[in-house]
Amino acid sequence: MQKIDLTCSFLDLTLNNPTVLASGILGTSATLLERTARCGAGAVTAKSCGPEPRAGHPNPVSVDWGGGVINAIGLTNPGAEEEVHLLRESKALLAPLGVPLIASIFAPTVEQFGEVARTISQAEPDLIEVNISCPNVGDEFGTPFAGLPDTAAAVTAAVKAVTDIPISVKLAPNVPSIARIAAAVVEAGADAITAVNTMPGMVIDAEAGRPVLSNKMGGISGPALKPIALRCVAEIARTVSVPIIGTGGVNTGRDAAEMILAGATAVGVGTAVWYRGPEAFQQINDELRAFMAQEGYTHLEEMRGLAIR
Ligand SMILES: Cc1cc2nc3c(=O)[nH]c(=O)nc-3n(C[C@H](O)[C@H](O)[C@H](O)COP(=O)(O)O)c2cc1C
Image (cartoon, rainbow, N blue to C red; front, side, top):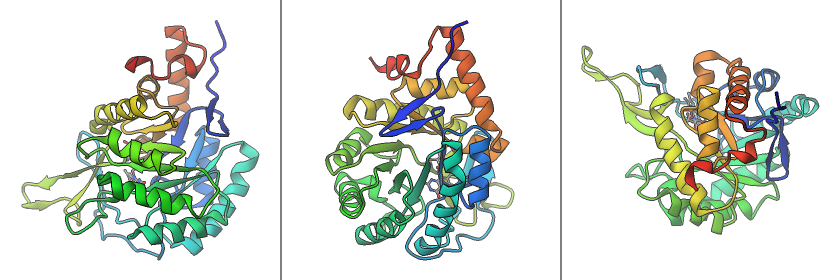
């Protein structure tokens, strides 16, 4: 049988395999990130951090509704200053494993995005993911920065102006043209794109007569998100040439293959880890290898974007 090569070049980084721990799941401590890396993740993303510490929303903040998960954690985080320590500690644990560290940032204003990026850069993560797409943060109409090309580009430019570390801008699925937003952030300097964040939704407890989440609405992730994410990745890959971390509903190696066939370079995994723990990475990689062997692929590059040609 031919040897299957899962290594993946992403910007200047070499990943042992294309799987990436998505932000918000297990990314709250250095030891959890290390454990996830030891379980087979190709790269790991810390939970999004903002300018100030935030307690987040009261419980319940995440539930399995049958077709996936809905969450409104409320961006619980220790604030950028404290996050620098977590990232430094994580980097030291991850470096011997050859697993890159991705920091994730959010902020309520364009200027504060720049400030958080500057602070976080002190820890020298391998990549900074710029979360402009949290469904629970936005203007008075609920529009996140990722909702409009101009605001998405403004945040991208503000972050690029203060750091030399490459950035991946994380986009939202609920926009009329994600290709247009992707083009705007690449024009503003984005080195990569993460697609996608969760899809806004609501789950109601009919007997109780109220929404299940304390925040009422939240972000849908997991299986229900996969076809939406694949469509987003394909539209972005057709429009820009930066690498994409395709994220949304990846639960199996076959799902990961679909993301790469849609044009993703790396594959984010969140809800599968929420359900199954970090062991999900080994399973996904084993299944991806088996799928490639069955279909006659030896390297990820042979598959990338094949479904959109
Ligand atoms: C419980 C939970 C918390 C999340 N927190 C964050 C976060 O802090 N920052 C972020 O950019 N995305 C966050 N996300 C979104 C994920 O990173 C990912 O984009 C999304 O869940 C889709 O991937 P999945 O279907 O594999 O989970 C969160 C998702 C979940 C389920």
